[in-house]
Length: 503
Ligand code: NAD
Image (tube, rainbow, N blue to C red; front, side):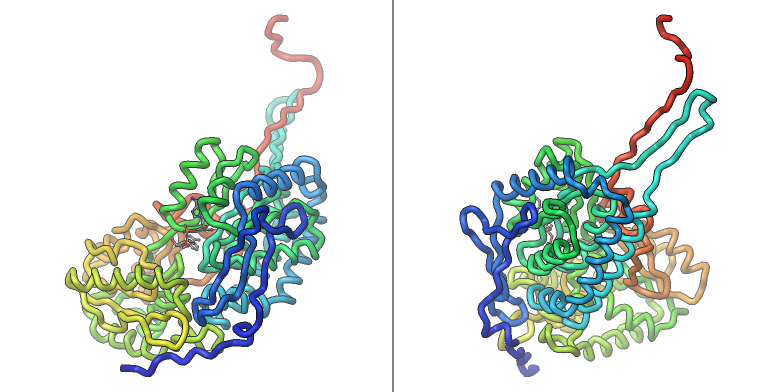
């Protein structure tokens, strides 16, 4: 039995929790009924933050503010160069406050501080990319329609966008949406997860400081049913950009369909890494551990299925197990930590239930499998399950915890069959030195991203999104700003009317 994890209490534990107020029409306000949500650090157990808890009245006020800012405010009307300047300023301010934001995300979500810094640095890069794209937005012209006609297709901002985000990458995910919506000239109402709202409120302060006009971005903390649902249903909202579970994504899409809103959906994943015998097995083993346990497996892109060729399975898995034993699990604020706390005790129980069910169905716990004893917070030992078969829930459903399910194959066809045998299609990885093998897998896997001899890298230039039930639409990439626009066709006729109808 290992000694319990010793979690040190940070300075924040003995200070009063910070209160974050809603951002509506450029002002910080309390909820009308005075309700608040308290957020405890899942890694330490003390209350880090209180957020004003919005309800329908605040959704109404926020949407009205965003609508007014869109209909009559300067933001959609200003030059793209002016919008870009404000977005660049926001990026600089995020960079200046990187440490504070990273610490908030680490405290509220339980993720390791060093990783959180990387995410905020990545977000800065995305804000800069979106700012530069603002000036590339353009339409088309058609001068080939005869002498009397000039056809022009212009792109206009779509309007008010509702942005709803999950808890696993609080600052990074809002940064995959909001700067692109703003670059297009849209206005927005943003709802972060009720468990990790603080860093999004800091972003609100930053945007105002950067010069964003009042009402362009409004931020509401609150529950999905009280705040998210009315943000989706509101008739003045034109588009919903949602990242979260496939279950809530489906409900959101059904609600948005009632008023035919455009939707962008980034949902769950059940991603496989396929390892062939000719791969650089040392690198593949490291990536298997990274893919399985990064962000405690609470990651849409987690490589939660390790699909290994039978000929190398025993040796490869013992290398993966040895590396797993070296992964430092514990205090999110410890610089050496690689796997922090689980987001909530309910979620931890859900993850261990998957492990128990899989073990009772005939797979075996090769490593980990248990909650770790600790003086504070909730932690799960990185877990490897061997003998998993395709029909088990653990092989098909998104577990969203540090659990690696191992399946084996002997032919490339079988590897592809396993990889595709899930309702999800977010991402996949292939490890082989043979270009034909890599290409066959890259083309054969039904997923939005395939990593070849690497795993879970991301660049703002590259579109990201899912096949099948992992989502709809793409974020990032050069077309990300276009996603927040409508196309308008304008036909200019010159000279005498042609083709008289009545005469
Ligand atoms: P979730 O679906 O429970 O919640 C996501 C957001 O939706 C939260 O802000 C929540 O309050 C809100 N919500 C809940 N009910 C709602 C309703 N009825 N109407 C409108 N909004 C509602 O997801 P989660 O547990 O916060 O996040 C984990 C999930 O997110 C995982 O499935 C993960 O794969 C997915 N995710 C996907 C991506 C991606 O890019 N594909 C990235 C990160 C996370």
